[in-house]
Amino acid sequence: MEKLKSLPAKDGFYMPGEFEPHWGCIMIWPKRPGSWPFGAGKARKAFARIAEAIADSEQVIMLAEEDVAENAREMLSGRIQIAVMESDDAWARDVGPTFVVNKDRRVRGIDWQFNAWGGTFDGLYPDWKKDDLLAGRFCERFGYPVYDAGHFVLEGGSIHSDGEGTLLVTESCLLSPGRNPSLTKLQIQEQLKCYLGAVKVIWLKAGIYQDETNEHVDNVCAFVRPGEVVLAWTDDQHDPQYEMSLADLRILEKETDAAGRHFKIHKLPIPKKPVCITEEELTGLSFEPGEDEREAGERLAASYVNFYISNGGVVVPQFGDDHDSEAVRILGECFPERKIYPVYARDIIVGGGNIHCITQQIPL
Figure 1 (cartoon, helix red, strand yellow):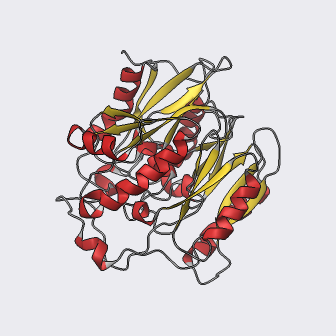
Figure 2 (cartoon, one colour):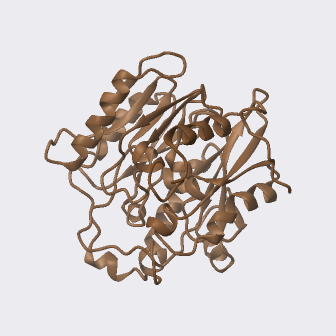
Figure 3 (cartoon, helix red, strand yellow):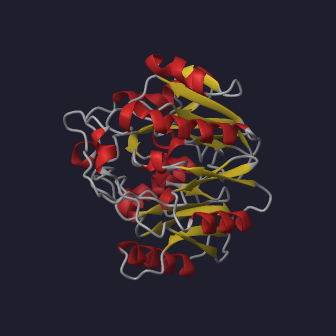
């Protein structure tokens, strides 16, 4: 399938909100030894729980490399479609297509350039060829026309749309030297408008402390619906996250969205106790030469904002923390029309991301 050379916005396409109807969701079965300890055993159980929760209300397509496809079939129910496809890791949000729609709800994909969150400057692994090809291959296999955005480095976790012309991003990520260093902030913003149909881009300062993606927005702030967001928060002024979230709060309080609305902001606590990788978990990892390595006691970028909105539910990470139930309560109030699915997700954050990072919605 030949990639489209035109621009989505000119063709009348835009990125809908995640809370809008989905046809389904893309996930990738985990296997990378440098991300998932002990043969990804615990990670696969967590992926399976998340996939089954999403499958309650929409189709799930689980991509899997050939050598682990049978394992995926064994661990997942028949509701979930298994498709053999190559990848370097399991971060479907970042390597999968970003989907856009038009007013008739025709769906097309966008194939960005992927460079492992920073390329040779600060990328997390040295070879990302299979990941970079995945979005185009997915669209070709499943029959979605796809826009060629191979000149522009972007990951799905670095953007959030309200479906009405407003986009949330972070300066720390999109202006990082490993993404598009030859482009100015204004030029990057113009690319987002041209490809995602955005009218207004709101630039938050920072994401979650220690987020190795250069602080993706999907870990710190997300739309609940147009004009309404959740923001990762801590009242502990000694926590590095406090100043980061405070800077974002001040921006959101001053800004309006594309429709001129002031934001309703829900503060969603981060875990009370920092989530850190253990020596035991480290012994189960096997890093390739040039791959970013972890250290025992390293703080992980755990956030309850990294949830996935399915047609019928909200799948929320849990960490065995005192704030788990509070996060569930707040999101239950934000999404009264949806079922809340709390899923223990420590075995995913060990890999570097969480529930939103391993999912990519396909709009209806």
